[in-house]
Image (tube, helix red, strand yellow):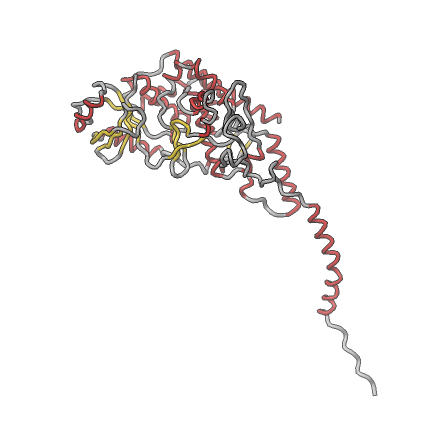
Length: 426
């Protein structure tokens, strides 16, 4: 009797044997790839990038409260070479892994000196032009229902409640040039494309028997305001909080302070909220240089000579809205008053400007246009006369002040060009 033949093995057992035999080879490949993978970038302290002291107190950073802190004389100085190197590293990792890099690793700086468009789009909108125009129109037509002391700076100022229910700070200058400086600074911000960072402001004429002030005639008598004086009405904004200059702007006192650049690696690793704030600071420092405003960050720098911790406290006349937008308050020291005191304050204002080498592209474009046309004063005059009905009461810049404004625009333009040239060779 014939024996029955055994059936040939099916395809599945054969495939299983082949896979089992390939496992040692696959394991070896995986081990080699893991060994060759680039290590995760670390900060000098061993912490992940983006956590290097930003938002930490001096104690948390292991610093003393006095001279051991870094010197504050910089905002940003981003080496282009470092940025290019990071881009090349990212491309190599992308080729090795075949996956896209995380969205938050994109460089916040474009072409060496400009904030990226993606970052600028995250900046809070501030006071929109349409909203500001509507408030200004309503404030000029409204009557002053009450005047209160406190909340608006000097003792001579008042908090006004208007008949439409809104509130405004009424600023009465020690001399008219302060109100003139407030008004001109507001409209210069418009010329520069950054007026959304300043609360809407209008001029008003104090007339005790006039329609606007008649309801507060008795309060006016107690204010000691001169009849016929020009005051400023600035929109009141609720829920503003103090702003401390961001790290590494802690400073030490003494002569010979030097700028300490912020590296590209640190900048790339920062959280978006801190980068968004730095975008606004770059505009603020440029604006304060053009107006020669000494009553904000410059006054803090001046105070370092006797108060080494002043940079750790709130910055004068700068507040933060709930959405993170910075509000450039109380600009009456700008232009007229500031230009009279250049010799005293420019030793602080000029180095502060030089510390900034990253700009909003729109701001740099407007500065370049004002430089090319040599039209800074003319543009400011045109805007001031068109948008402020009481401009003639205070007048405009003198010829010498107009020349100083143009000279400062030219200086800023040359500084931006210098930053661009530095970025190109690094």
